[in-house]
Length: 397
Image 1 (tube, helix red, strand yellow):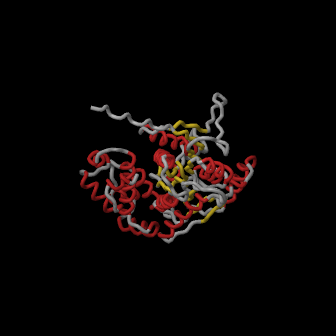
Image 2: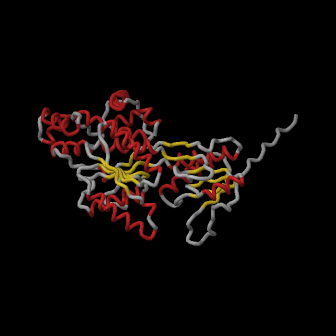
Image 3: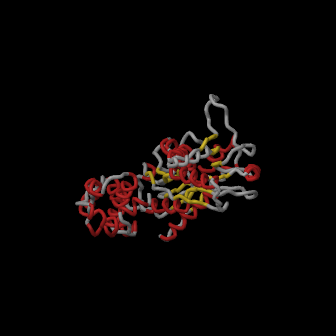
């Protein structure tokens, strides 16, 4: 009997990774996804641009780099031409790409979905005025604006577009220019107004400028960013709400696409894989809004701060704010266009959905924690309010 043929040795690919900043936020989470891909048995010899304080020789990934594949956050036309000539496979991790020269397949955030998610969150606060802090030189900012505006228009609302072309300013004056322009823009807002910023850095600029302009965050202007960067979101006062970035899935998807390309699969250079954001990390910057009707404001804040194991009903809400059922119904309808019960159910369903996405709890454990009699009642409630089952909600995260 002949011995089994030896398995062919798996090739180790030389892969370069060039991100904005590997040490925190965006880049750090992408690396986690790349490492998950490697743990599945794939073999990359990785080389990446990394700050080390001089302890390691700096890696330079440019048009002179040699290797098999690259995961890069943006690139120049000269780099693209050189990599294409050398046969290096490239995956672009940015929406942006040069106007001239070769382009490469992309893995990006679904920015339209992020914009829609932002609008949904701010609409849920009972607001009627909205603004978007925009960078007109960046395509991703345009896409987030489009998603935001489209969802608002479905509710008969629009938004003011506040522009700061930050990337056009020289680095030595950029921060000062951003502050000066942001102050003038924020001073022009009429409160209450929900502000969606193109990313977390822009949201930090906005929060600081709003304070200088005399607006309170979140009472006058709730602010929402994108990326959920732990440093930026917690360096503001109040802490900032932000749309979460699916970093691990992002990195895993990009590494898998690059592996396929290096293995010889033909991928259309116009390919773009868009990964939807998994949800919002809600913090104090969108936690409380002062609406025109103080009774509705008190009621809304009570609903939001009530824990899931202490469900609210209309009777409890009426006693809390000192109004009859009919008075509260009329005031809610005039301010929000929905009934108190609809608002109670909406907020409760949001909290349940967040638990579904961020935990692996069974339906029975969830139902006990959230004040339902059992898993069946929880399923019926979520289907009635959101149109989706708990399983569908968890699968979409």
